[in-house]
Image 1 (cartoon, one colour):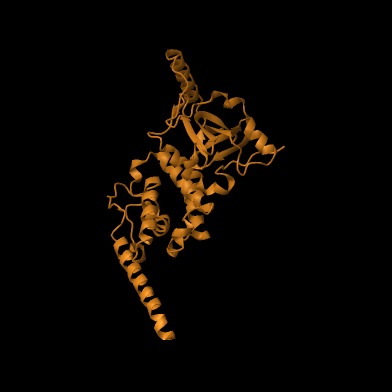
Image 2 (image 1 turned 45 degrees about the horizontal axis):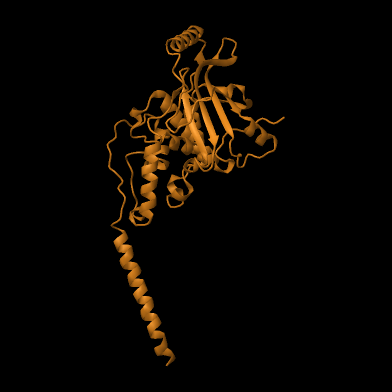
Length: 318
């Protein structure tokens, strides 16, 4: 009797297993596309750098994606497809020719910085693709290569003065231009110059100098050590200038490049980590971005700092 009582349970288990197998087979046909795209201009780097890129980066950040047998199985395929499509959209070494020289340096610096911060390669990707892991020797090669791309800007006072005159002429001819507004609705705030300085920094790969400002809410948060997370209403502005090295080796600011804003509003900007991003370029304060999705590019750069509420700045403290 006891043996017969187990039979219905075994049948139910077998039926459940069969249903699971059928569902798994059906799911194999639900596959997001990983497009086969041409190589329009592969990144021109030395062989030792290229080998690192190919091993650790190319499967997600190029048009030369190679899927292993395990990558082909759903649901693993879904995750891999998401990594590839997202990775290509942010950085594609096979379409390097579509970037300006300045953008190429920016992307290289961002890539190495993400590696140093442990954000790349992604942990969930390298777990099943151990060959993608980077070691200290690999990182040293990348840092040395990037350092070799640095060009010190010579003093060019005439150029700076010409840009300033051009800007003043532009203001004179267009007095009713209004306040520039980014595509996500964030307006340029000229008052940032009156905010308190949070920190300063420079970027060696682009030879720029930066001053980071904070509004009253941000400054109070720093004083109270209340920046994880930053309070609602915090505003951070980062102004950039070219770095000029004079004949004595002293560094000073040159031409104005841009000003970036971060505005904390967890509900309004939930899709970008609770921060609203905006960038206004050159002295004309031209809003950056062709679509509102430009903010996705910003938060992707800041993701390694998630544990610090997506803010790179380490504020000065009295």
